[in-house]
Length: 243
Picture 1 (cartoon, rainbow, N blue to C red):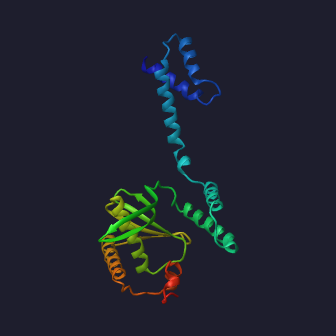
Picture 2 (cartoon, one colour):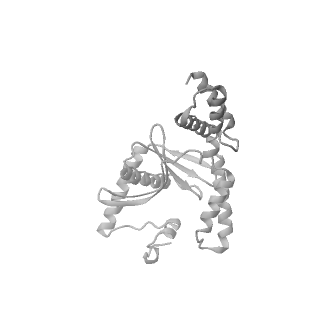
């Protein structure tokens, strides 16, 4: 088969691929009409694969891009499968959730492909156990980016940085990620915050975790009541200092 014949067969394949009849049959007809040798199944398979690759490249953005309708459908499916504890506030939370997700989608937050989602970890750090769930981990050209989503209002910088540093400490130890970057996304406002000085934060998080673990182990763990923390603490019913 000459290069000219291959080009002709490729053009015919491309033009007839979407007709409701076999494009391979056109190749046989043309080869017979022009007195050329039948291209054979191997050649036909190769140019059909080329058509598939071309379509994937052309429609790639549409294939990987999550539309607003797709996002609403996913949210509705998950919402219907999850029991919300307060029926009086369910509609408000559902509406707010849809709005926050759509805002995040429009900002490009869902365009990339995560390396890990809802990644659990359970590791031993300096003699104490650290476990939790990281919302998202992306692979960037220079590092592993650990992303923590927040649906509520902004928290103080110290508490915010310590929390995401503990996530990073657990995930990096469990998955052997190095180096790591830290990012916090506030879905309500769409603001994305990069946390600086990651190495120092990880060291401080490990130090504070060790101090707390030693205090608990010695039975002299000093309570530090806070309304938000106490509300989420599983020991609040037996703690005399709980708010």
